Length: 233
Image 1 (cartoon, rainbow, N blue to C red):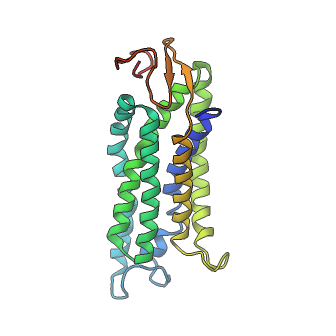
Image 2: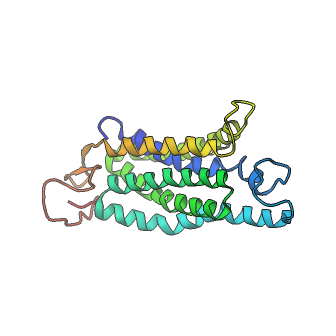
């Protein structure tokens, strides 16, 4: 992350929150509105069953994120921020793409798999927060962590807007319920490429040179933990 690693990390958080917000205008049409052309349940299905399925499909993302967040955080301490961020972003892109395919194929189990995968890889929030702490000086950390909250807010605002516009065929004839998720998959893929092809070095609070690209110091070959900054050095 050569010049502005903070913005790449903030974009990662924005992508995660988009995954929640983008469902807002789409999911009710898939499972809660029998009059919608995108309704996935049969005409004979009870509307109440669609609402129940709606709730489970919304819940699977935060549940998987809850379990995955500490695991991804520990993996980033061991193997570095960059590989874990890149892998989780690739998983997020795949999750969006699978959700779009599930809508096209009208495959509800695939929708659940896609949201579960997105939730697991969306647990990279802890990694992004740690990366921000790694690449900023102590006096700037409060400001940069505040930007995390701003990214959350923007994601929850833009997500429903994008979901509604990109699913509206009156805007473009080829727009449908799957289009917002293809768009989000492209954004996540672009962010993955940004993380993979960028790196930066800084001096940690303990005075040891660290790298966001590997999460480790180049001053020593032995992976001993640095108690001050939480990285391997």
